[in-house]
Length: 358
Image 1: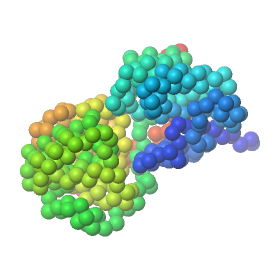
Image 2: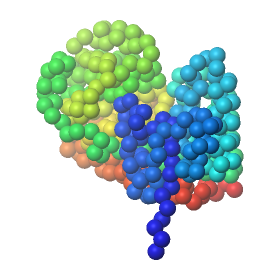
Image 3: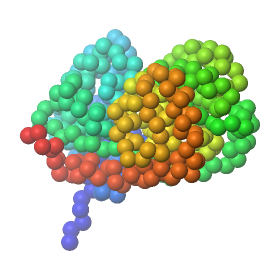
Image 4: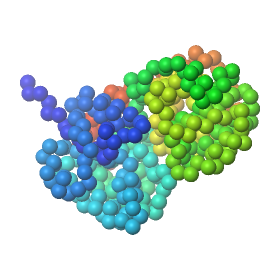
């Protein structure tokens, strides 16, 4: 029997380019189990493409807006160059894939609207982490009927972070009190994540919980720092990139993870919490609603931008026995094992299967 030929895929960015999230490593590692080999980062250069096309079967784009946001003056040229690159890829027989991580993109800019619309005309396979994003993709960008739209849930983080090691020492190093429940907002600090809502909720809860906000700043976080300063004793801000060991320690210390986002397309922070057997209180948005379905004790949903609701849900959720919260979160994490979530994506890559709209 002839062995199945491995399908070869290059991406932008690639595994070696990731800064702080093991998403790429987990994704392409899982695809390897389906005989799909990651061949590194592709260069957005037509000559590079002609030289390497014979050794590839597909190109995979993540966060395309960063391909043209490099310089405001050159954005139109970069968008046109990307479209020509993808048309050349099609002529060379390569499948063109886009994982729609954020729709709309974070910090939306005018050039993004034209870029994403044109990009959608050149994609053979779209990957969406929720049914809501797939619906928005169809409504807003109206991709060709010949394109495939694959629902691939965000996978969990099993094996990606080390086990906790001296979490109490971590708490002491950042003056995090261990005499009350810890609620945590974890991840890059960005405006859409509702960090101001979290700080207000922490003030309402007074001494019944302590809030830890931990993550690398994105843009101006001076207002967050001012809010934290007004909440002395209730909030600890760690505005820096944590090591993997520190992330593991903080998750271990946390009783609940807060996700008070104003909008969301996908959330690695949610999967990170569930993987660590930590329940969440999240904004009642489609992605969170989809992911938490079926496990009531894994978390609570609250209206976005409502600190009173976030505080009330926290009081209620902390009354649930910790073992029940933990077990429910872990059961959800198990549903998002990478080998399971990539199955339909792998099949679409191998067969070119469409989503029934032809």
